[in-house]
Each structure stands twice: as structure tokens, then as C-alpha cells.
Amino acid sequence: MIAQLRSIAGWGAITAYLVTGAVIYFRVMPGAAWHWPPDFHFLGYNAQTIAPFLDALSGPARDGYVRVLEVYDRLFIIALAVWLALTGWRGSGLRYVVAGLAVLYAIIDLSENEAILRVLDDGDAFVSAAHHLTMAKFASLYLCILVLIVHVRRSA
Image (cartoon, rainbow, N blue to C red; front, side, top):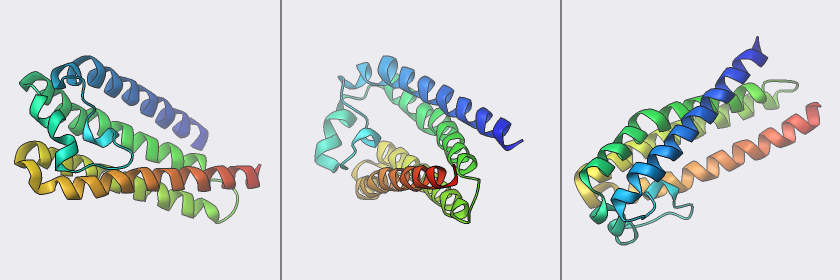
């Protein structure tokens, strides 16, 4: 049962990721003069560094980016978190840590999406929050994956 759910979540995450990538590459980036969206900045950003993206973002590209944040990325986040938790659901009590880190990652990433949506609507007011959430998202995901790898290797 867990293996089937893990497979469904994994394929759901892959599908949502591919759709997100296609929309960003074929619709958002051309409409933003090929500037990367803020949530792809691993080391964070500030109002000045994302200004070119926001200034160049055309109406259709903005609509596509909003759709990505509100639909496709949410599906990806949830499916990935479920896959991480189910992959780690074995063996010792470390499985609870993996599941907790997966939930933490999902909460942070969903919060980051909301902050970026507010940046698109309100401008600079939420850039700092979005910046910190972006860095926290990557840190929590990397930590979850690291703990998952150690746990899977120990329980194999």
C-alpha cells in the first residue's frame, strides 16, 4: 500500500515539475526578458535583484507565473513532500524525523509561494519575507533529503 502511494506521489511530483518547467520556460521567461523568477534564486534576492524580472514581466507571462505558483507548484510541493515522507517511512524512529522535515519543507515552500504572489501584487513590501522563505525552502528540502538518504541507507 505504501509503495503504491509512494509511486503515485512520485509520478505526481515529476508530472507537476515538468508542467511547471514547461510553463516557466515557454511562457514566463520569454515574457520576462529571460530573467529567472525569484523562487529559483538559491542564494536569495532583494528588491533590486528581482526588479528586472518584475519590470519585464508582461501580462500573459505574469498570468502564467501566477498559475504556476497557485496550481502547478502547489501540486509539486505536496506530491514531493508526500513522496519524501513515504520513502522514509520504514525502520527506526528516524522515519518521524523524515516525515516531519517533509511537512516542514512543504509549509515553507507553500508560504514562499504566497509571499511571491504578494510581491507580484504589492511590490517591494514582501520581498524580504519571500527572500528568507526561498532560502529556508532550499535549506529544509536539502536537510530532508540528507536525513532521508542516511535513514534509507541505515534501514537497507
